[in-house]
Image (cartoon, rainbow, N blue to C red):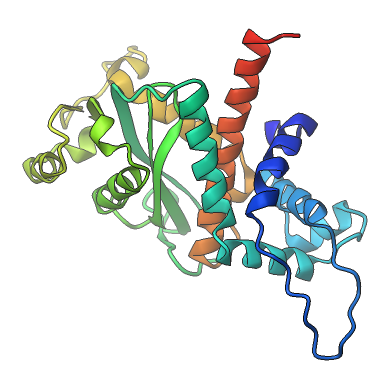
Length: 279
């Protein structure tokens, strides 16, 4: 898995390290065990993202060099400090500066996944016999780079997540640069077109409701430009922590999704470096 390749981990941690909040050096007893290195904790968080294993299993995988309690508390500490959000933001800015986002066409869609432990932001999945699940909505540029994400329960309609996803794009300062917005037939409503038009998104490529592939016809022919976001959703679904989330807090799932987004972008940047600077 790309997220665990040494060169990817090195770049990720080099980006994360300056973003980490200063550690709390105070202790009520005036003494404490040495603080576990941040890099080891970050490595454990990456292993959990890839495998979806429990924190106790991650502790065992790391040879009990760090406890599951420390891993969870360090993750919460970094979430509170906005580390994962800042990491994804910096990765996106670096990609735009080095390669350049292609926003002539932006595709947006949702993806439903399992959340067997329930908790915040989960609901009965309409595609998994009513079992608990969660959903993300992601917008990507023409190369499949995520530029905005939102999450909610699996029982929430994609239309509910449309506005938060657009808000995330606007927060990144990219909304005005979008040319065509490509959506599936679930968004084919006059009210949706009006809401998007009010946000300046007037050039829409919306698949008409009732459009299905003919017998024997490849489904990709009905996707239009949306195959890009479908590919990104498939890539994100490869991560065990996202595919079957056992997190019970919405902020934990959101942080994992942002970390996976940063891995995707940094992997693309490394590929670009290898392509144009093989030496």
